Length: 122
Image: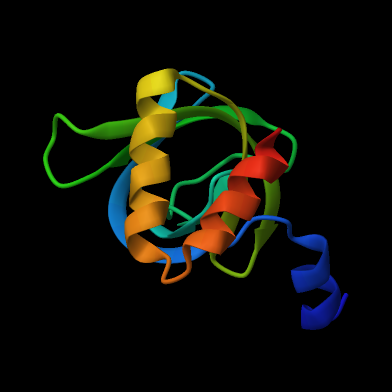
Protein backbone atom coordinates (compact mmCIF):
# COMPACT_ATOMS: atom_id res chain seq x y z
CA UNK A 1 0.00 0.00 0.00
CA UNK A 2 1.42 3.41 -0.91
CA UNK A 3 1.56 6.42 1.42
CA UNK A 4 -1.16 8.07 -0.65
CA UNK A 5 -3.50 5.11 -0.19
CA UNK A 6 -2.82 5.09 3.54
CA UNK A 7 -3.46 8.83 3.98
CA UNK A 8 -6.66 8.68 1.91
CA UNK A 9 -7.89 5.79 4.05
CA UNK A 10 -7.01 7.55 7.31
CA UNK A 11 -9.97 9.64 8.51
CA UNK A 12 -8.36 11.19 11.58
CA UNK A 13 -5.44 13.62 11.60
CA UNK A 14 -2.43 12.61 13.64
CA UNK A 15 -0.31 14.90 15.74
CA UNK A 16 3.26 14.23 16.72
CA UNK A 17 3.43 14.01 20.49
CA UNK A 18 6.14 12.54 22.68
CA UNK A 19 4.89 11.16 25.99
CA UNK A 20 5.50 8.11 28.17
CA UNK A 21 2.94 5.31 27.83
CA UNK A 22 2.04 2.11 29.61
CA UNK A 23 0.44 -0.73 27.69
CA UNK A 24 -1.31 -3.46 29.64
CA UNK A 25 -1.63 -6.76 27.80
CA UNK A 26 -2.27 -10.23 29.23
CA UNK A 27 -1.57 -9.14 32.82
CA UNK A 28 1.78 -7.62 31.82
CA UNK A 29 2.68 -3.94 31.72
CA UNK A 30 5.00 -2.54 29.06
CA UNK A 31 6.64 0.90 29.25
CA UNK A 32 7.19 2.80 26.02
CA UNK A 33 6.83 6.16 24.27
CA UNK A 34 4.07 7.70 22.22
CA UNK A 35 5.06 8.76 18.70
CA UNK A 36 1.80 10.29 17.50
CA UNK A 37 -1.87 10.36 18.40
CA UNK A 38 -5.29 11.05 16.89
CA UNK A 39 -8.85 11.02 18.18
CA UNK A 40 -9.11 7.36 17.13
CA UNK A 41 -5.74 5.84 17.99
CA UNK A 42 -2.02 6.14 18.55
CA UNK A 43 1.36 5.08 17.27
CA UNK A 44 3.70 3.74 19.95
CA UNK A 45 7.33 2.66 19.96
CA UNK A 46 7.59 -1.13 20.49
CA UNK A 47 9.06 -2.02 23.89
CA UNK A 48 12.01 -4.44 23.63
CA UNK A 49 10.15 -7.19 25.54
CA UNK A 50 6.85 -6.80 23.62
CA UNK A 51 5.00 -10.08 23.04
CA UNK A 52 1.72 -8.76 21.63
CA UNK A 53 0.30 -9.49 18.20
CA UNK A 54 -2.07 -7.80 15.77
CA UNK A 55 -5.63 -8.20 17.06
CA UNK A 56 -4.68 -8.28 20.76
CA UNK A 57 -6.81 -6.16 23.10
CA UNK A 58 -4.87 -3.89 25.44
CA UNK A 59 -5.17 -0.89 27.72
CA UNK A 60 -3.13 2.16 26.67
CA UNK A 61 -2.29 4.78 29.32
CA UNK A 62 -0.68 7.99 28.08
CA UNK A 63 0.92 10.17 30.77
CA UNK A 64 0.66 13.86 30.06
CA UNK A 65 2.36 16.74 31.89
CA UNK A 66 2.26 15.09 35.31
CA UNK A 67 1.67 11.64 36.74
CA UNK A 68 -1.95 12.49 37.60
CA UNK A 69 -3.03 13.45 34.07
CA UNK A 70 -3.50 10.26 32.06
CA UNK A 71 -5.45 9.43 28.92
CA UNK A 72 -6.70 5.84 29.19
CA UNK A 73 -8.21 3.88 26.32
CA UNK A 74 -9.28 0.31 25.70
CA UNK A 75 -7.66 -0.50 22.40
CA UNK A 76 -6.64 -3.16 19.91
CA UNK A 77 -3.26 -3.65 18.28
CA UNK A 78 -4.07 -2.71 14.67
CA UNK A 79 -0.63 -3.19 13.12
CA UNK A 80 3.00 -3.81 13.98
CA UNK A 81 5.68 -2.63 11.59
CA UNK A 82 9.32 -1.73 11.92
CA UNK A 83 9.61 -0.57 15.54
CA UNK A 84 6.08 0.78 15.93
CA UNK A 85 2.70 -0.44 17.12
CA UNK A 86 -0.47 1.07 15.68
CA UNK A 87 -3.20 1.12 18.32
CA UNK A 88 -6.89 1.60 17.48
CA UNK A 89 -9.09 3.02 20.25
CA UNK A 90 -12.15 0.88 20.93
CA UNK A 91 -13.42 2.55 24.11
CA UNK A 92 -12.50 5.69 26.06
CA UNK A 93 -13.99 7.32 29.15
CA UNK A 94 -15.34 10.89 29.21
CA UNK A 95 -12.41 12.38 31.11
CA UNK A 96 -9.86 10.78 28.77
CA UNK A 97 -11.68 11.85 25.59
CA UNK A 98 -11.87 15.40 26.95
CA UNK A 99 -8.11 15.38 27.60
CA UNK A 100 -7.44 13.86 24.17
CA UNK A 101 -9.66 16.37 22.41
CA UNK A 102 -7.91 19.26 24.16
CA UNK A 103 -4.49 17.83 23.28
CA UNK A 104 -5.42 17.51 19.61
CA UNK A 105 -7.03 20.95 19.59
CA UNK A 106 -3.90 22.61 21.02
CA UNK A 107 -1.65 20.90 18.50
CA UNK A 108 -3.69 21.34 15.31
CA UNK A 109 -3.26 24.64 13.52
CA UNK A 110 -6.66 24.40 11.82
CA UNK A 111 -9.81 24.12 13.94
CA UNK A 112 -11.78 22.97 10.88
CA UNK A 113 -9.69 19.79 10.87
CA UNK A 114 -10.58 19.19 14.51
CA UNK A 115 -14.29 19.72 13.78
CA UNK A 116 -14.15 17.23 10.86
CA UNK A 117 -12.39 14.66 13.05
CA UNK A 118 -14.99 15.09 15.78
CA UNK A 119 -17.82 14.68 13.26
CA UNK A 120 -16.17 11.51 11.94
CA UNK A 121 -16.30 10.03 15.44
CA UNK A 122 -20.08 10.10 15.08
